[in-house]
Length: 338
Image 1 (cartoon, rainbow, N blue to C red):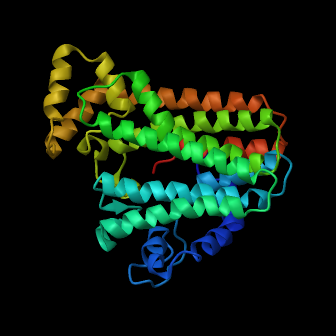
Image 2 (tube, helix red, strand yellow):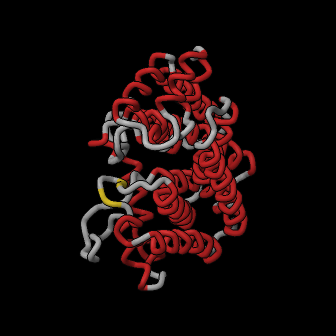
């Protein structure tokens, strides 16, 4: 079990960090305020702050996938930067869509700078991601750009389903998994293979790494679903029961719905009806979801997807060090608390 942040995240952040800042520096100066703030590089007034940014899982995967193809870490940097830019484009827009006013224990960009600035900043990051790949001097740059474009399209399709499901009483488990595979799995599959693509790795290696990333993405999202109901606000930086507030049809609710009696389904529908559920109603709904197996089934699903990710790695002839870091990173993703 991983009980601390794996060293690979610090190592790959040191490699990709300067390139990320250099890419963002090419944006219009008018965008620097909201973008630097979003990345945690500056306060709202532009004052630089130490540290910042998220966990850096996607850049780490991109760099590790280049190393898996026998290339140096630097070969994966354009892919790492592009993936992080696309990921943060989606976060900026998601915060607007979900009306989230806090992320990583700070006010969100739209809450401080306005909806317009948040949307245009996200658009700029998405465009910049493709520029980074097309400008890279790499044998697989064009293929990598195509892969990222397809992954982004699939991610958006997953987000469309996520929004659509909010207005439905229930969705099936297959529908939920399809949505989460697009919403989260697609981008992690791309992250885990884009470095190998850029380094000219074999199709077999690229496919195996993408499968590892897809399964890891489903495990990652399952853990997010657990944190979205039972995560501690002090740790996650989001309100308690955030997914229930937003009427998300995430895995815990879907698993519980499939096991609930007719009367329990009516009770869940009543507790989470349109509008803003009360604190008492959300607490009662969370307890009912847990009682009907939603929490345990989601954790089991995450564990199964983690095992599937490892099986995908087993089909490759990886350097021992790279394999170890991919395994450690996957454990960290599934065992994290925020």
